[in-house]
Image (cartoon, rainbow, N blue to C red; front, side, top):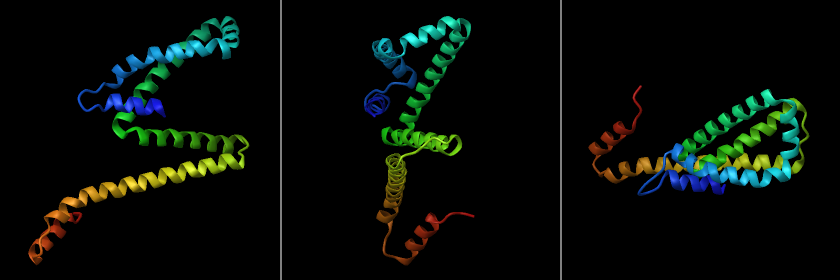
Length: 167
């Protein structure tokens, strides 16, 4: 969550903002350094053994994964720039809920009661946020109309005509 908020601040700055590609240029070395610090402790030995057995395929997987990660980061930064940090985090949570739900439904993965509670809480929080956001937008859109109304019958009918949806 901190990365999403940090990227939202850099992408939507008041005085100057970064493009998604520029932000990726600044964040990629930090992510690589963190990965290289953890890699020897977690996956280095199995990866090196697999890469020795599958040298040509391994290079293809490595390059393909790198390209996918690059595009995913660009899309994520663009999404944060367009929607904001909270909406992007909610979409990330929804993606996790959908992935686990599909795995449980089609692959028979077991789901505990605590996980089910978490999924339901995530979906309800997302629905509540969306509803409150929609109400806030509706209030902002209708505020100029309320301010411009006058007490005469003629102006009221004009306001109603202006608010109505054309067929």
